[in-house]
Length: 301
Image 1 (tube, rainbow, N blue to C red):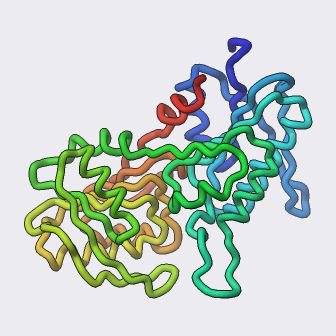
Image 2: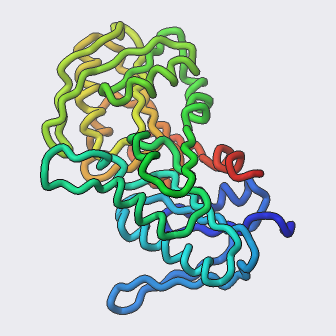
């Protein structure tokens, strides 16, 4: 390790990305010892010397987001109190990012609250990837670097792209993302109009674009319960698209009934990143693209 190299630590939410990032940066992954007291309280210790060093902490705020946020802040506090010169946080998936506004009185602004809590980590910089709502950038007091995984995902998709492929946004919120991916792949795009009925139930009510006989590539920033994708797949099937569906997303949370829902779809492949720790044993073809090259470029001086 060279004297100016950063010290890299990873929390329990992101071991895969931590290992890949260490390889990309050419630095070892430092130890961080985690344990719990009998009452459930978290305790950790960083045995490496961090005095005068730049320390990079890697931790996605995947479920349980509150636990992983507290773990990240405990790591930051331990390093700061041990004399670290600079702290940087790599938070590929930012939990609570969907709570960027209040839909009705009595609701909290969860995204702003998480941003405020991250400010307690004394981070000189926070790196995030494909925020659900870019408006959250304005909630951070410390510098926020917002990266996108679309070029990496586009490279992974190229072998499956043909002259019959069409990129599809499953709702209006994914339009800009679909347009950007279509530009990278050199393909046309379409959009589905979605109405959300509840936290995991949606209804697709319309389609703009030509998909008949084409192989759709559904793109979104995250796949949570899979309800949006199921509704979109039904709309595409009714519109006459081919039964060869590709789903591409940055954050494959796959919570609740997501896996079973994906199993019922004519899904050829799910392509996602390691912003969420990859799961084994999925009943669908799942290609995981590491964010390490993207994050490593952003971290290098």
